[in-house]
Length: 219
Ligand code: AP5
Ligand code: ZN
Image (tube, rainbow, N blue to C red; front, side, top):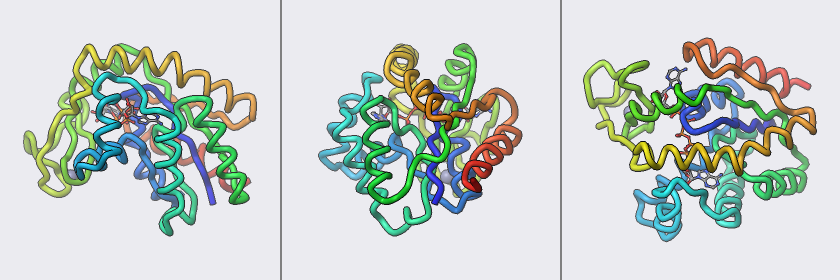
C-alpha cells in the first residue's frame, strides 16, 4: 500500500505526472486541487468555500482540506494506497496525514519534490490549458493539443484556470514558499525526501518519479 506525496510549486508538473505515476503503482491519484474544482463544478458548499480561497491564490483551511482527503481515502478505490498531489501543503496537514495513516497501519513511504526554476513555472502557468472532461493539462508552448482548444484524448473543450492570471500566480508562489517549503525539511528529517529535476521532457521526469516511488514501495 504505497502512499507517495508529490511536492512542488504551482506549475512544477504534479498534475501532469501524478496520474501515470499512480497507475504505475496501482494506487489512487488524489489531487486536492482537482477535488476542490470538482466540488465547485457540482455546486457544493465545499466548492463555493474553496473558490473563495483559490481565486486569491490562498490555501483552503486545513480542517476542511484534511476532512476532504480522508473522506476520499476511505473509499474502496483507495485501498491500494495513493499518490497525493498537492496534499499536504502545510505542517498541520502533514501531521494530520501521518496520524491518519498510522491509524490504518500505514505511513507516507516517499515524498518526492519536483524542482523547477521560477521563470519556467511562470511561463508554464501562463500557457496552460486544461480539458474540461478529463483534466489533462496542455501547454501552448511545450505540449500543445493536436487541434487548438480540443483535448487529444476525448475531444473535450480546453479552458484556462482563473488562478493562472499573473497576479494570482505570484501570490500562489509566495504562499508555496511560506507555507509548503517547510514540508521539504519535514520529510527530509524523516529520511523520506527524494528530489527530482522537474525541468526537461515529461517522459524522462516520469521515469525518475516511478523509480523514486517504486524503490520506496518495495522497502
Ligand atoms: P492545485 O490545483 O493543486 O494547483 P497548484 O499546486 O498550484 O499546482 P498546479 O495545478 O498549478 O500545477 P502542477 O504542478 O499540477 O502543474 P501541471 O502539471 O498542471 O491547487 C489549486 C488551489 O487549490 C491552491 O492554490 C489552493 O487554493 C487549493 N488547494 C489545493 N490543495 C490544497 C491543500 N492541500 N491545502 C489548501 N489548499 C489547497 O503543469 C503546469 C503546466 O506546465 C501545464 O501547462 C503543463 O502542460 C506544463 N508542463 C508540465 N510538465 C512540463 C514539462 N516537463 N516541460 C514543459 N511543460 C510542462
Ligand atoms: Zn480530455
